[in-house]
Structure formats: C-alpha cells, structure tokens
Image (cartoon, rainbow, N blue to C red; front, side, top):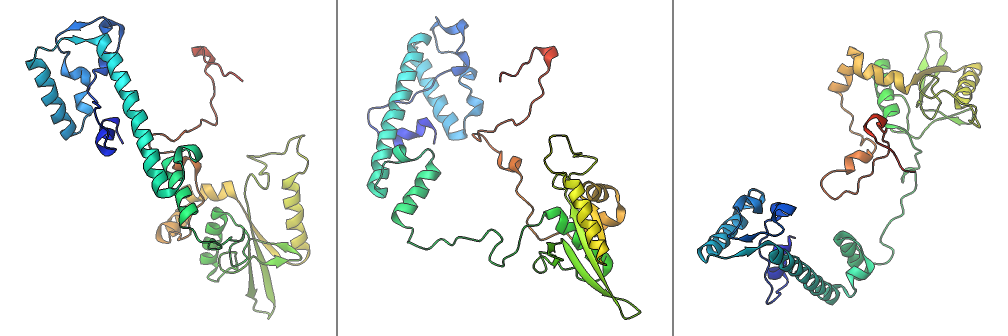
Length: 302
C-alpha cells in the first residue's frame, strides 16, 4: 500500500500527504526558493492515471496561488509528514489486527503473510489436522532424480517394455542393493535376461570428467560405482549405464532423443530451482558466487 493511501485506508485525521519533487533532491536545489519547480521533477510519468490527475490539479492550484516553494522547508515538512503518517497507520493497523486476531502482528511477525499464517494457526487451525508426510511419500518410495527418470522413460520406449522404476513401482533391490531400473526379458532359448539400468549423477558418483576425486576425498565414489557395477555383472546381470553429462549432451544433440521428448513431454514435476523463486522486487536475493575484476579495483572483503 502506498503511503499516500494510508490516510484514507486507516481513517487518519488531520494528516496531509502532499507531493515532493524528489528528482530535485540534489545540492543544486537545496537552497532554492521561488516559484513551483517543473512538473517533471515530481516524476509524473511514474504515477497512475488517477494519481497523475490529482497531482495536476494540486500543482495548478499552487501555481495559481503564486505559491513560493522553499525546498529546504518543504523537504523537512514532507519527511515529518511521511513519518507521522506511517507511525499512525502502523498504530491503527496493530489495533485493528489485534482486535480481530488477538495478538500484536508487529511483535510476533516480520511480514504480512507470516502474520496471516499466525492468525490462522492461532484461531482457525484444528488440532491434529496436518498430516506428516513420510520422506518417501505415502507409497514408501525412495528418491530418484528427475533426469534419471527421464532417461529410464526413453530406455523403456526403445525397449518396448516397461522398466521397473521408482515411478512405475518401488525401486527394485538386486543382491541387497537398490537399482534405478530393472527388467527381465525372455530369450529365445527359454532363458531370462536380467537387465539393470543405472543412471550416474555426475556429482553423486564422481564423474571422472567433471568431478574427479581429490586427495581430500574420504571415499572415492567413482570407484564405489565401478565396484557395484562389476558385482552385478559377476552375478549374471546385464548392466546398462548412463552418465548424467552424457544424457544432457544427447538431449541437446541427438535427433532421436530430442524427437522423443518433444513428442512425449514428462508429466512429472521437475525439482525446484532456487533462482525461479527470485523474482519481483523485495526478494533479498543473495549472490552465491562473484569473481572480482581486480583490473577495475574490485575486491571481496572476507
């Protein structure tokens, strides 16, 4: 809510929220005294149509009265008026809110949304009505990456047979270890081919190209991945592997892969991206990484 609307919204009396040419707030005008300053200095272009109409009426009346504009005096009065309006509006808001919700929102909360949620919890939320969802959901499923499930969808399409995944069923356990995908195929000789699908996230499995192990690593996840694959193969399983970086390249460059996903977009919700939440004005966004340009005199104070 703009400060100019608070007087009417909260029924405040004997307060006046005028106009200030804030674009003139610079040393050139600090000692100015004379006729009204140019309208452009009031940033009329940034006002809504009704507000602009009200401003023009006010400005024209000041000019008609030959009003003498003293910048220093007007600035002090404008600041005092702003603080007075905000103080009284806050007091009125606290009184109104406390009368309805039963508590002081400015004492317990930081934002209006948190105050509304506190009022809901205090006055309307019934006991034992919020379900505590298990980490794997009510179906008892574990976690699986969005990229892995997309790759398994594509592999299932190529195979022409449903591959058991965490999405189609629960994760299959083979020799006591969970696998990303599993399928059994009938062979012409009457036998059965037991096939395992493993999707290796580059970070979680220490991709040797993008995340090579260092001397500080307590465990070599890449070697662990290789040992697990070898164990499956020793026990008679066919293992199909795909690295995350390789799959990303295929999504961008392989015509067959691109055509499949264009024709079969996934219905699953992708993971949240932190940057998607940083939109609008007051987001308190943080910059997680910045490379200082020393040639421009930049430095990072630690």
